[in-house]
Every structure is written in C-alpha cells, then in structure tokens.
Image (cartoon, rainbow, N blue to C red; front, top):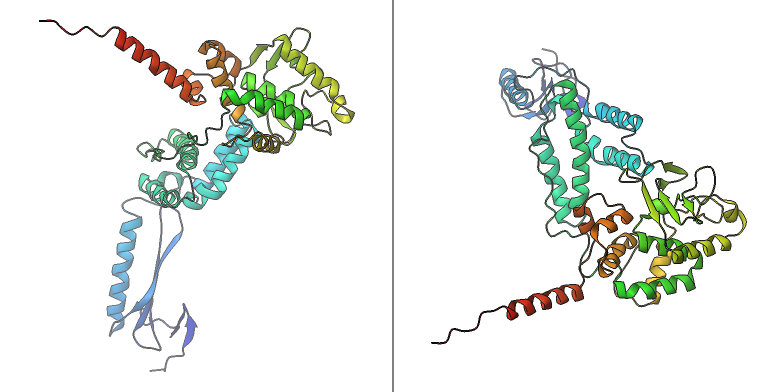
Length: 409
C-alpha cells in the first residue's frame, strides 16, 4: 500500500485520494468527510465538511450519508428544485414596474425602496426563489430585527415600513405565479410604547407660542418668514410649498384673485412630482392679509431668485433644499426659549391645533390641509391641556347641575 501524501485542504492535512467517496484520511488520525446537496429554495449548494472519529472508512461514510440525508430533509422536503425567479431579481423587477407605472412617483419614494431592498430585504431573502420563501423565514428576520428594536438600534415603525414593501413584493408574486403568499399571516411589529410624538416632544407649536415664533422668524430669517407663515396657516407640507410657482406657463399662485393651487410635490434635487402626496389637488382662497405677506415676499426677492418662477426660490433661483428650514426653526426655537423641539413638520401639526382653537370645522380644516380622512387629521392634532381642562370643567358643571336632589323621608 502506497503511503499517503498529505496535502492541506479545508483547514486540515488529508490524503487527497479518498478512501471512499467523500471520505479522506487525516494525518492527525480519523477521517474528514465532505458532501454537498442542492438547496431547492435557493439553488445553492449546501455542504457537510467535518472531522469524524471513526475506525474504518465505511463507518465514516455512513456518518456522512446520515448527515447529508438529515440536511436534505431539512431544506428539501418533497419539493423539487424551483424554476421561478429569485427574490432579489423579482423584487428589482417589481420596483422597476412600479416606477414605470407611476406607482412610485417621487424621488423620495424611489430612494426609500432602494434602501429597503439593498439594506434589508435582498440581504435577508435575495437568494430564495420566490415560491420557497416561507412565513418562518420572515418571522426569523422579524426576530432578529426585534432584537435591534429592543436594543434601541431600530424603530418598530421602520420595521413595519420594511414589511410593507415585502408585502407588496410577496403579494405580486402570489398573484403572478399562483403561489401562496407567505406574508398573509405575518403580523406587523407592535408599536405600543414607541411614540412618534410625546407630551415632551409633540413637534407642534402651542398656539400661544405661534405669534412669538413667527415674530422671531421675521426678525432673524426674513426670507423664510412667508413660507413659514403659509405653512402654519395652511398646514401644507414643505414638499408642497417648495415647488409653488408664482408665474410661468402654469402658475400656482394668483395674487390678484388670492387663489393658491397645490398640485405638485418636490422631494429631491430638481425633480418635481406632478401630484401631491395624497394625490388630491387643492384650491385655497387666501385672505388679504396673507396675500399682502406674499406680495412683500416676492418684492423682496433679488438677483436670480427674483428671476425665478418659483414663489420660494433659493438664492440661485432653483428649489429650496430639503433642509432649508431646519436651521431657522432650530435657532428661532432656541431664541424664544421653547422648552420643546420643533421641526418644519411642526407646521402641519400646528395648523390643526390653530384651526381647532379658532372653532374651524373639521371639513374646512381638511379642505385647507389636504388630509384625506378624519383619522389622519386626528393623527396630526394635539389636544392641549387647557382644551382638555375646559372640556372637563364643562362636563363637571353639567354633571353636577343635573344631579338629582337627595330623597327626603
């Protein structure tokens, strides 16, 4: 018998000539066994490669066969190798299809999908064939993401956004290929205890603070006063305010008639989506006081900003950057001594509270802010302490006034 010639392979010193198929003698004694099967869910090879303590090659071969059978049972079951597309390829196709159909119209929407696919879904499920993705696979991902939530590294709302994109893809695959949708019984992350807005940080100006805030904005950032006032009284999103046109072939503002049309959205760069976030155009009649503020704002524009068709242009005449209001809001809040932080998104929430205090009906408020439903309007509203106290006082007064007198024997 020819003595073995040892070679370094698989982190071990072995005889390269197998004693039996998949069974190799080790220099250190015993055997190294190696075998592979094809995973029908991914089409990838799954391997068994380890050291076994056996006296004879056939004993090592028996252990290898048993391990390969167990592995095959775990990943294969009775299914055959899939022929449908892998999740990564199908997800990319769905993304492109939705962009082409206009279902994902904004640059921000496309960026959201790209990030979710590249950072979350493709790393987790990209190799699976779409008909081999199971609810257990998704629950396994949820468990891992849930650990990040508990560690404070992620938020359940973000996890639910990722799941919503996954649902779109899995539902499309179920319809297109007539397969079971693995997301049907997968529940979203529980958001209880994870608040977007709190009493300490409502991201809404108290109505009593609005005049002080606007006065300081006018003094410190006069070029941002008009857009801030318009945002506070209409509840329009910054993305709806930035693309407003004061002139050109299709102006959105008619100062003579006092009419403002809201029908576009700007999210990134120079790209404008020819629709609002809700998909509903708005026509708002402006009061004379607001028209005067906008006239003064336009008259104060200079240089390339004055030559722009935009109502609120940057100094170069283009769209204001997304972060244009961030620093003014932070500095004004600090200057007037606000004990809570507000961002430009506070304009939409504050408008709801101002309208409620002014006694404006919900129907009119939604017509101005563009909220599609009463529930969404409530989501953007903050019931203030004095409102609650006044309501409770009225209820107490009514309750005690109609309480029956004690019976007299």
